[in-house]
Image (tube, rainbow, N blue to C red; front, top):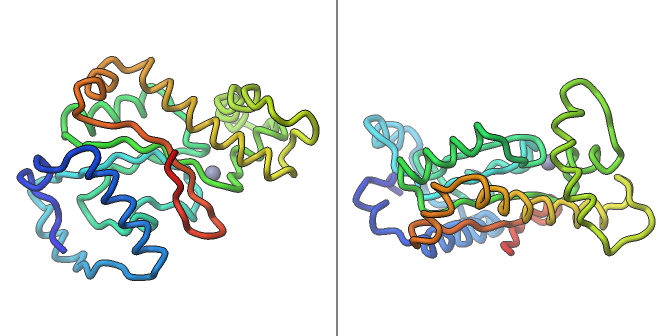
Length: 206
Ligand SMILES: [Zn+2]
């Protein structure tokens, strides 16, 4: 498996980029990893990188984008932060990844049993974690289907908040970045959300 080049990256449509990720997750689930020589890919990418996807995911040790989508060096711009929340620097990273380096898709990837979401649901306050968890609060407030046990012990509630958090993050990307929303309107990129299930390894795209 070769690393992407300018030529191969140029030919990929946003929809194909999504298919590459879906196919990669299926390979991961079947334990059929593509045969990659990572050292060779170091060589192939030494003078430039042409990643087709940009993925915002949680710092959770179980949610490495390259692993769960079976991708190699030079395939993915990987942005990671607890709770896959957004800030201006992350938006800048996405604008670079798509607007300058031509990646074709932005995936906001939440996951089940997310510690950041659980902590936000339990209103944890500790150091800089407090401010970070504030960014998940709108998702908790937007969850209106459950009237009781709205806490971190209720995993149905927690996972529902994670899904809403992904959707709200996507809305924020579109609202706060004219560069990215224009790229999306022009059909140059797509912005999609998904949830990774830490019990099965399955990524479900919305
Ligand atoms: Zn998490």
